[in-house]
Image (cartoon, rainbow, N blue to C red; front, side):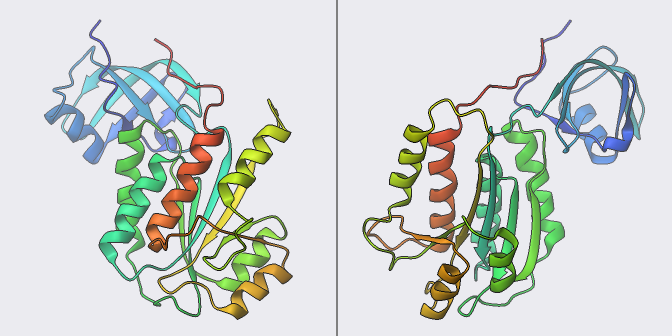
Length: 259
């Protein structure tokens, strides 16, 4: 049998998976045929976006679909051993927002919520385009779950959703409130902890949070923390948060597709 091209995954609708069969349709089927020259017997790697990852063998090829036999199944292949919910103020630049979405997928973020703040530009973004970026990045980086995206959430709603324990990133936070130090302390205090960690992070817009917003976060028992002395762009700050958590806690059990 030919070896699986592990640099390429295909995304299947979960409804197209049943028993030991799955069906790739539309663009996914066309890509497999035109780019990989898939034919009967070709092995492929397929994910369903909700945690299912499959090694399959092509059984039948047509213009509209590829019918495949599932030869092995794995749950949550490529997913982080923690849950990270990222709240970010809406960005002015569409290009920067799209890069942010792609990179957050690569870092294993589970959900991105775009928040309206006092200094955030209220702009309508095509969620459908962002979702296409999520799909492409998911297949490229080997994840099996799609990062969800939500827009238009108010600052107060974001705070209320998480209750106590979230992290709000603010350049005016006390010097002793370094986020990386907090993560390191948590890892040392709970070595080998089996409980799945959950993080909620809120990153501000260009210009940062207002004093009133910081006070509101503290009243909601969020931790106001710093990423260091340098001023970071909003998207850089968000990626720094995701990257720090990934480095500190991302070495959990590896989930791989069986050979």
